[in-house]
Image (cartoon, rainbow, N blue to C red; front, side, top):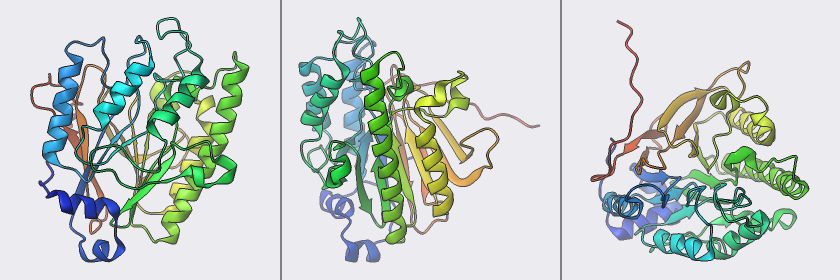
Length: 334
């Protein structure tokens, strides 16, 4: 389990604001936390366990925290009151809290157990509640650059990026349940096509910004696990094909460390060197990090050291008082 050094609040603000003169002079490592798929009200003691997550992250005092969606369970009614409660939860984080949506809070709300909402109405509500301004949530919010600045894709206010010590960080709205790729629903397919196009443009624009600034690395955050090989389901990749193709091409051209952080499957996983397709060559500078979720209310912590060749050092952030998760076992070769 990685621990980050405690930092005074003024330093956190300076780091998160990424003031260029200070970033050049202060190349000391910093850390960020990431989590997703929590809290689920149907899970035992969910509220208290999530409160412990917030308390521990506040104690560790990372430069920022990212929540990668699924802020309610798929069997919960996604009411306005629930969404407002989650926004209030996010504002209990001492440092900046950046949020990117998951499928449970909009894509899947058409189901009976989720309340038979219109997913597009829920998506509009999310944008109003969580993304009204170009800044993070949390008690000490930071300014963000969002896709609303592009007249072609101004609706996609949730796609955001920010910079700390020259490293570029960005969210992109890619969600589970096939990324809302539902051929049985004309409205879903229209939404998917438009967002898929916006996401491609955002990924390309963010990599271009990173190249222009000579960024030492870039980290991406999204809700879904888009890798079809992990799912073992034929046809699963249809909703993610363009996203994966764009990430692969841009990461290969960038040639520096790229970290892809996602939630979705509620398990911790860290893979260095990624193949975006089974037959594709491995990209050794691309690392995938998956965080915990559901009944496993824990987070991941990433130390960022721009002086290191790898830049990102990741590991679990286990939350005191919450039941321990099942962690991957190292295989023995002797």
